[in-house]
Image (cartoon, rainbow over all chains, first blue to last red; front, top):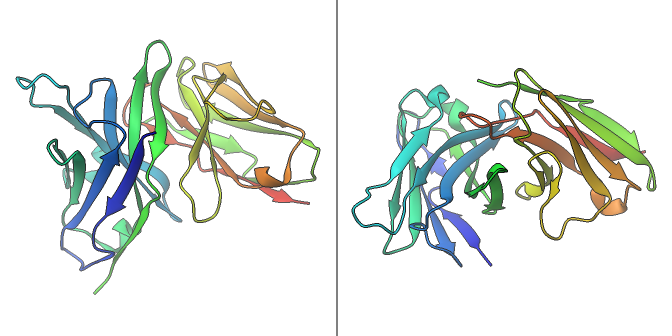
Length: 129
Length: 107
């Protein structure tokens, strides 16, 4: 059974960098067909997909990332395959970035598209001085 | 970006009722639409993917249908544990987007 768990500071200062880590058990972040994603949720914006990291077990492949353009280049998602974790960094944060942040496994299912099938429990990050 | 509009935004219903929620996409998304259920303080839970396919463990009273730009989630015989907020989400093209949610409340 795949499980995901977010960790990181719950309070970030304005203009600072939000950093979260997702620890994965029951699956590997270097397995193909999975897109390791971050999603956030706030009362104002609702649910918003932030981006994903994708990799395979082929050590010649460095992985791929894709981000929501709404975040205007402030986001980086990366993976630490030996630790089986992936991370989110969002810089130049403002109060508008206050939200619950979820790490999510997205599975590519043949003919069925990309399916958000496993979610972490979520962590609240508040941007405030 | 593809916009998803759910209707209604909220509804009141009784145990045993049949409930239908609609999700309209701003452009053709084929059948690449999922439905989620979210309860307070919890992460969204996948119910249905690719418009009408059940995720494992989801009760059969939840059914999904539709293609193109119009989709529905139907709950046949509402149960007490079904009172929650429901979201649609498209995976046709990035950025993957969500609807604004439909809150199902006890009448």
